[in-house]
Image (tube, rainbow, N blue to C red; front, side, top):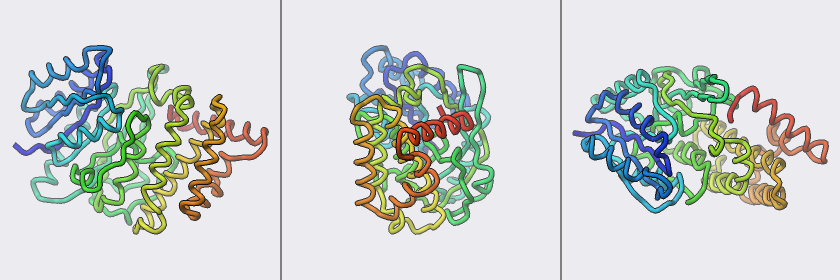
Length: 344
């Protein structure tokens, strides 16, 4: 049977929570045989992740495939899932997250319809929900004012995405051939590669569809989580590395034909540069600011138009204020945005 979709679950020492993730997909799909789950054990050593992956495959050999590899990091595990996928579509679900059952049913119904009628849709977008464990609150990210609902469109039909509406890995379901066509440049042993995944393939997607359901449940609150602010600051070198990869993926003004897609990607990249600037200021690493300025200089040499848009626009100006007083103001602006958006 042709697989409608492959859900890839990258796992690294994930034994404590991976079962919940897997069960949410199995139950939401009603154990459908056209659904595939690829569990990628990324060289786990501290628990029984590898054994659990094999047990899940043994229980449901028609649905679940276990892949084992040497530790390469999240991005390498994501691409191992792409290689192993038998589905027409591909979606990544991190091992500490889960999918909503009713939303998943709607997604499967939609994808099956596209396949049955040979309707090519390169990218399906759904909502995601931040599940904040510290206060039990939810923050839903939807695209109702940025995208028309329930229509197959091209990028020229998209609207304006506000700062809280970037298309992240949690919201994306690509056709697998889009990911394979040009590859996705994932660096090894690096966090925050989801930004590359949500950026580089976009110009290859010629058609997209917004399904307005709250599918992805994004767990926020574990102390060692990669999106914990203190962890992000300690990994500023990895933020810089990811942003550099995104920079060199495109000369946006020359290589992205759709004006609206280009505008979106420029805004996304600008926010990435802003994150680098803010976290470099918050970091206690002595070379953090120097490394950040090197990245800005590299951007200026690589593409002057991208540099001007990122550095001299409102976001770039607010996150790169000069002097000590300006640095405090920049951090203050970031704190306000953090409370409004609740992004970590």
